[in-house]
Amino acid sequence: MAIITRPVSAGSTLAGNRLPRPVPWVVLVASIAASIALFALLAAASGSAFSIVGTAVVAAILSLAVITGISASVEGRRQAVDRFITGLVTGAFLLAMVPLVSVAITVVGNGLARFDPEFFAYSMRNVTGEGGGALHAMVGTLMITLAATVISVPLGLLTSIYLVEYGRGRLARAITFFVDVMTGIPSIVAGLFAYAAFALILGPGVRMGIIGAVALSVLMIPVVVRSSEEMLRLVPNELREASYALGVPKWRTIVKVVLPTSIAGITTGVMLAIARVIGETAPLLITAGFTASMNYNLFNDRMQSLPVYVYTQFANQGNPGWAFLERAWAAALALILIVMLLNLLARLIARWFSPTSRR
Image 1 (cartoon, rainbow, N blue to C red):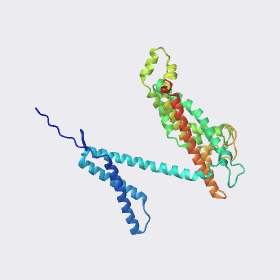
Image 2: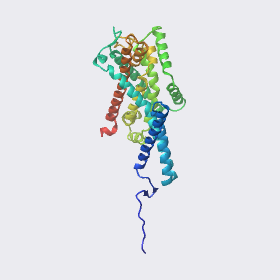
Image 3: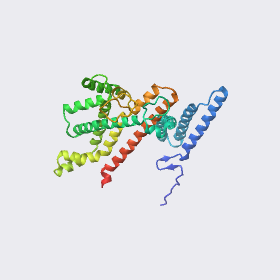
């Protein structure tokens, strides 16, 4: 008995017909061209400026509608819906990237004007116009953030270990509730709390770097607790049970098995907490104040930080005004670069201490 086979066309698969891969890109290019031509004609007819935003929106809508229609006629309804949802998700991603890219370009473009050796080597002491730098603000930011990290990470990590490994009953539920409440505390409230606590002991009007670190730790602790808790819960119970079967105590199992397994995620959570607080202005303005001089002592007098430096340079512009704006933009760029370097350092630490890298 002869078996008759039919040749399979290039545009079909076992799941059905499929559009060639270049088709979506051709449709997108054609939609962009049509949108540019449309808005160019409208601009020429009305005498107004060419709308880049309108062109992008119309091109996206036109491309999505055309590719969905073509897909429905060739590939079927299910594949058309898949392409439509994919287009919506891609468009949402690109739309979310617009402000991020815009902010990055703006900060870099305006901040590079004062990225010179003087900016990184001098403070604002005795500077009233041009020149000066932000060395005192960088040192203050690093010291205050480091102190807040030293306070927050042990408390947050130990709290998350208790909730995952030991916590049961009302106490664990109460801790979880208060951590959730602390997550939504406004930063200004954390600053007022830290200032009030130290003012009761040292008197009103006190301003010190350590008070700013305490205020930032109030904001960091819930982030560290939540992120560390989720990472610890991801550790398979089989690893714990294997350790217990060998007679290892629970505390040693946590130290030698659970924490090394989740160290990468915990480090990422700590860096997220640092990134959350390193740009805070209001609590540091209340607790640490601002100064034009260097201060290496967290427990004595006011201490400048980069967010407060940016605020004071922009809000208290002197003569010439452009010098103050240039310093503000340069400090904002320096703050972004510090966050990027800290994240890179966290990635390296997580990779170095991860279990897979030590095999």
